[in-house]
Amino acid sequence: MIEVNNINVYYDKAQALTNLSMSVKEGQVVSVIGANGAGKTTIMKTIMGLVRPTNGSVKFIGNNISHLPTHKIVESGIIYVPEGRRIFSTLSVYDNLEMGGYSKTYSKKELKERIEEQFNFFPRLKDRMNQKGGSLSGGEQQMLAIARGLMSQPKLLMLDEPSLGLAPIIIEDIFKIIVDINKEKKIPIILVEQNAYMALEISNRAYVLESGVIVKEGSSVALRESSDIIKAYLGG
Ligand code: ATP
Image (cartoon, rainbow, N blue to C red; front, side, top):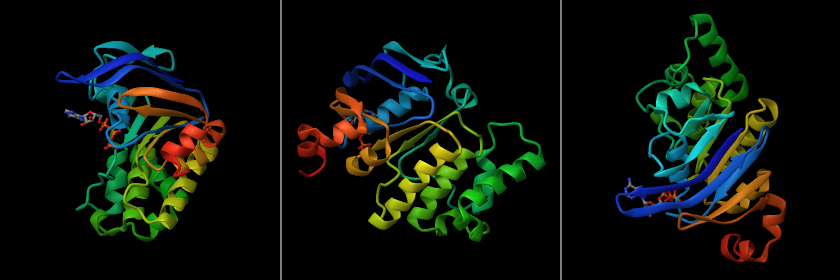
């Protein structure tokens, strides 16, 4: 589905990613875990064409997308929900969702149907459809950010720290939604998380990133049992 091959990324002279390769197959949830500043967001930004690697490539469904502008990458079916739930706080929930369909040439009827789909999936958003985005709770804003991303029916969804700043009980809701999206909508997901425990709990495979280098990869079940990972990331 997506293959990142041996990329190097720099911010000026500082190297953020080093010889990094990763891949996601159809149907999988793949998590990228690592501490603050390890380079997790940079991977997402590179896939979206927001930063450019100095070498290597990103292939999506067999096509090299490394040199495409971001809007073409979005059109090709990759949706990135950035850290910090950047919803439009002065727009209503409904209008936020409408904005999510912008990259598609939906008819009015299709747009309505897509919004209805989100409301079926996120009933809480339906209850609040006329409320301004900024008036929602943190968890609801995260749901809105994800729902907005789903409006364009992505082929790959990338979620950057969806649990950030949320209470544990709300984090559970959000992770359940992520699993449901993957299972019911059959959308593969790249999940970037500092919350390694939850990320390993719901993903099929995972990459562990330290200072821009993948230091471990494998099935999430195996990583959950690895003593290095338990020590470094699971509070063991
Ligand atoms: P966080 O969880 O804090 O978002 P992260 O793992 O996503 O961390 P990145 O945001 O990808 O990490 O950052 C990787 C490294 O690149 C860090 O050292 C960071 O300071 C640096 N960096 C990130 N963005 C820029 C930028 N625009 N200019 C310069 N350096 C940057």
